[in-house]
Image 1 (cartoon, rainbow, N blue to C red):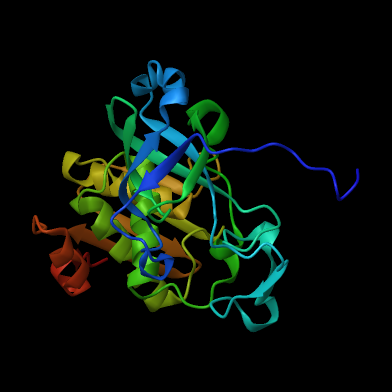
Image 2 (cartoon, rainbow, N blue to C red):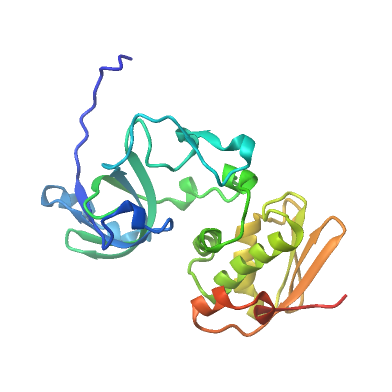
Length: 272
C-alpha cells in the first residue's frame, strides 16, 4: 500500500465542552455535548435505546509525527513506549476513541459523560457500545503491571472510574473501594490485579456495593480462585502469609469527604 494513498474522512459533528485547553482537561474527562450536523441527524434514530456509545474524534491539536514517548510514571526500564500501546494524543492518524454514557438526546445534540475531548473537537463517527463485544473483564494493560506509584488523586480517579464502570454508578462505596485498594498498595506494595491476591467479600447487603467495586479493581473471579464469598459484613484480602480483614463503617454522603478522610474513618480492622 502506498504511503501516498489517502482516504476520505469528514466530521459528522463537533464537541461542545466547557474546557477549550487540553492541558486543563481532567484525565477522566467531563460531561459534554456532541452536536451532530443536520445532514447526519437521521443517523441518530433510536440512539437513546443505548446506555453507552463510542465517540470517535479527530485530535486536531495532536502530534502525528511521534511514534514513541517517554512516560515517567512507568518503571525506569519501561518508560519509552510506542504510541500504539498508549492513549496519547500523539498518533500517525489523530483518532480518539471514547466510551461514554449517553445521558440525553436533545434533537441533534447528545449529552455524554465522561468525554475528554476539548471544545471544538471534530467528531468523525459515533457507534453503540456493546457489552457482548466490547467488555472484556479479564483484560490487563501495561498500567496494571508497570506503573511505579498507585497512590495520589490521579490514580484514585482512575480506580473510581474503573469500579464505577463495573458497578454502574460512582456511589460512596465505589469511592471507598478505590481508597481501600490504594491503602492495600501502601500497606503491602501489592498491585490490585496481582494473581496471588485473594479477595473475600461478605454477603451482608451493606457490603455488596463495596464488593462490586473491589471485584472490579482486583479482577478477582470465582473461576480463578481469587474471589470468595462468605456470610458476614466484612471484606478481606490475602497475599501469601498476609491477611487483612475490615468492616466498613458508615460513610459520609459527600464523595469528596470519602476521598479526604483517613482510611480508619472508613473501615475498622477485624481482629483474627
